[in-house]
Image 1 (cartoon, rainbow, N blue to C red):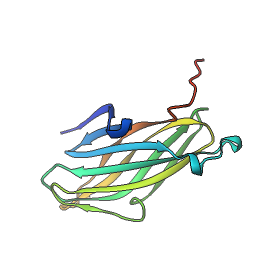
Image 2: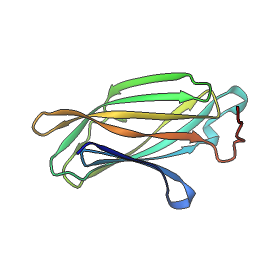
Image 3: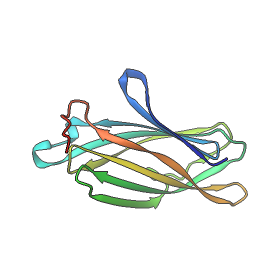
Image 4: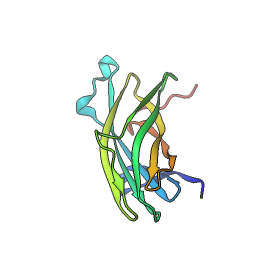
Length: 146
């Protein structure tokens, strides 16, 4: 039952989605650059990301914690840990989904995020599920090769 991850998948309207599956729980991330909340001249680049979590298993599970690893284009890494997501600790019965949108500011025009959710089953078993690594890149940003 381990973890299976796939890379970017093209979604509707040319958005890029990222997908990971752990213990029959699917996590799909769709990031997008938010120009009207960004200030490039002040090195402030804001990203929104929508995450859908679907329980394709047979047991009820609850999301209890989150852990993010956020890395900007200069390699600066920030670890963020906390309870739940967007103030909730959703319970997902078999076949149910939960979707939310959140955001992250960076000091560089690009970066990436990855992480995990701490889950608990109805029987009290604690386990982590993967959030796929996803790119925070503006489509119009020019690429530099070192």
